[in-house]
Length: 251
Image (spheres, one colour):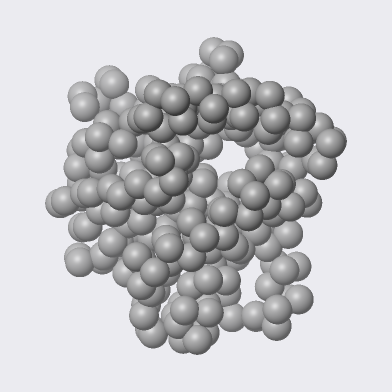
């Protein structure tokens, strides 16, 4: 990917064309609106399957004692708590999110669990405040598609990882089977916004989230962009007919 073609999604917000700054502001608005209902909506939208996806994700990541871990776009703590449990609290976990409202929810959940040894940092994935070669593992779950400058964020991930470090992304993907895709599209168009309206009192935000999934790069395209960002190798695995994928890349 040439320099001028970096971050092609940066001016796309759902079906609308906006500036990069406008997209960032609009995405912040979406998650400000849904923060307190975000985890409940994940259960409603996926029928609880998101928990299985996240557990499989953590098993693939396989965090170890002493690892320095950055969980990006991890606001409500779902992935970070799994890192903490998997390592019996012996990893150094930093949770980062551009949205303070999401982090506030996560920190409250951490307190409820008696977890006080995580760092919580509000920052943009495309401009991380951390030193080079700082982390062993970088995870991002269901957050990359909402980043304004995806290629910048991937380059930042490569920068902050140590040699031998690994990047893992769990994200919605694209269903390949035409019959299942048709069912999935109807569900996404008709039911997810309705669930958002009923549960989160916010239909528009969930209409955006559906569109953000559709506009997210295809699996092979994201693999190529990871290599372009500075990773030495990249691969992906799919789950649930391609509804989600795990992308893994090594520094």
